[in-house]
Amino acid sequence: MLEKSLGNRKCDKGVIEAIQAKLHGQAQDADFLKNLIYSGALDICIDGLKEVTADIRAKICQFVESYFRGNIIMTTQPLEWTPPSTAKIYKLQPLEQAQIQQFLISRQPRLPKDAKVQGNNYEQACTSYLATALSKQQSPEE
Figure 1: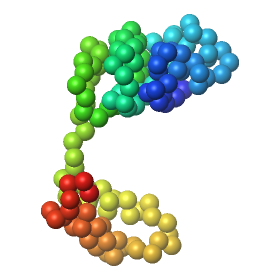
Figure 2 (figure 1 turned 90 degrees about the vertical axis):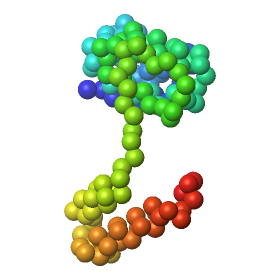
Figure 3 (figure 1 turned 135 degrees about the vertical axis):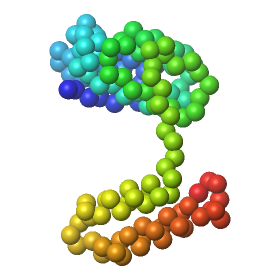
Figure 4 (figure 1 turned 180 degrees about the vertical axis):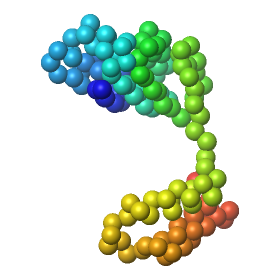
């Protein structure tokens, strides 16, 4: 499986053209590339749809609708737009504090053997960090 990530601004001439610019050799051939995309042999990620003009978003949507069998993921912050008709929408939801703590604690086995904080001290450090980071007295920006 071939994977390439596209910056949204590179799609101003079209998604196929943006992908071609990242590839070499036979994969740059437009017909071959279109077959790779349509067959799902190429994973495409287009990030930051909110950061581009409506015209570029329209080109991207047209591309996604044309290659609906491909593996394409698009990401954006909240945005007033009409996503491609073939899109499946996922919205990221914030984790609860207990979920965050459980995740952080689950990372302990990945710590280097010589980590300064380990065991119960690591768990306490996670708890303390979350209490500070998620305190009601933190500003909304934090």
